[in-house]
Length: 255
Ligand code: ADP
Ligand code: MG
Image (tube, rainbow, N blue to C red; front, side, top):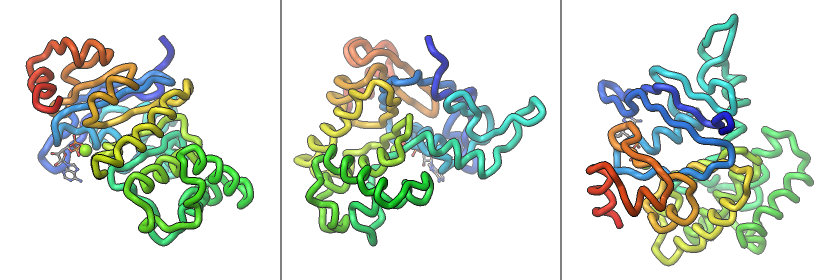
């Protein structure tokens, strides 16, 4: 097996006196599509937010693409990472949030061109061409000049996915990308994610309650409970023959 592209090594995350991640060990291989399921409050979002450097860690090491995310190796030792190191590492990842998080005062196209111009130093023309290709990919080529509030939730989330793709990350993180949507809009967003999942090289880490979808697109499903992986396996096994009592209980309640 190849080196993992994501590796949590005994990671501890506390909020005050509450331990949210309890010596978490967790790895993802390059190109792998992994779904995290589990009860509310079990630490799923925290895992993604740590990877995006939106939350720090209290102990352990997070590795991304062979380098520590929160540390730098200096003099053979792991030291706290500089801002510069974290910026560089962050470019390897893109994230799609439950609440879309689009820039409300920017057009759809500008939502997609802003970071590539500012961070990747693309020319306006290059960024615009890239944006228009991505809008076509998510079926929104006609909406480029609109503002987010003029779009449906499903359309906004498709913009969110296109915006994350515009930075060409090697790893895409999705945190309940359809949970805020009306039921009739869920399918169009899942279709876009399904198409992305067909990209062999893209590593995907997805938190979702859409069990049917998770079963279709995942190489592996991890059941999180109280900040640890309680059980994991290929979807065919985990969904059909869960071994742990807590997994069984959770699946009975949600499916
Ligand atoms: P999940 O995504 O699985 O529902 P989270 O990772 O969001 O769970 O949260 C795990 C636990 O950490 C919860 O108990 C939550 O209340 C707590 N938590 C998350 N973020 C914060 C924060 N910024 N401050 C304090 N507690 C937090
Ligand atoms: Mg969450």
